[in-house]
Image 1 (spheres, rainbow, N blue to C red):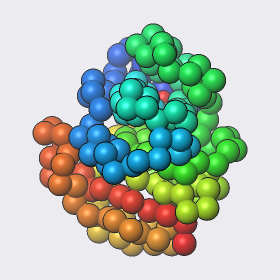
Image 2: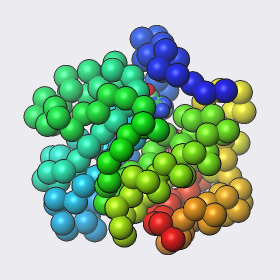
Image 3: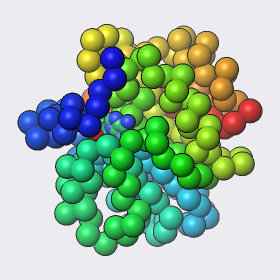
Length: 193
Ligand SMILES: C[S@@+](CC[C@H](N)C(=O)[O-])C[C@H]1O[C@@H](n2cnc3c(N)ncnc32)[C@H](O)[C@@H]1O
């Protein structure tokens, strides 16, 4: 079962946004410290309040894009970070996006999608990555829920699943998760094979 825009709008309207941590998560802050090229094209899909996009923007990255299916998420982000270029806020479905990026950052987007969409997620990610582009971020290593988001997953299952699509530069327990997610996340750094 796919969750459509109405579902996500309702979550935002009802403030059922338990995923929202209120600050940029450590794995991204640390990863960004290794990026020296400030004009690489970066996408954050299912961005929500996009604290990581704000962080990158404030650190001088000038080609950061965010997409969310819910206009409410983007309105909230826009209000909080008025200096972020409005043309880089994409309102729409990730699966309909046709562009290319050097780096795509994953945090609680994969787990927001129904597991039946995981293959489509990988295929679409591959279509969005420029040559040498990378998909980097965190995935839950936690069973979580099977009937509503956040849908769970495990390191073992990811080791089986992702090599069909990507070259796995890193797929390991995340060592610098935020405290509430410590021991429940894996860090990924994938690229097209
Ligand atoms: C669990 S939230 C995570 C938000 C953000 N990544 C964070 O960590 O705070 C999932 C977000 O993905 C958005 N979303 C769900 N399906 C989407 C789709 N097909 N395309 C774009 N955004 C989508 C939702 O509106 C929601 O804001």
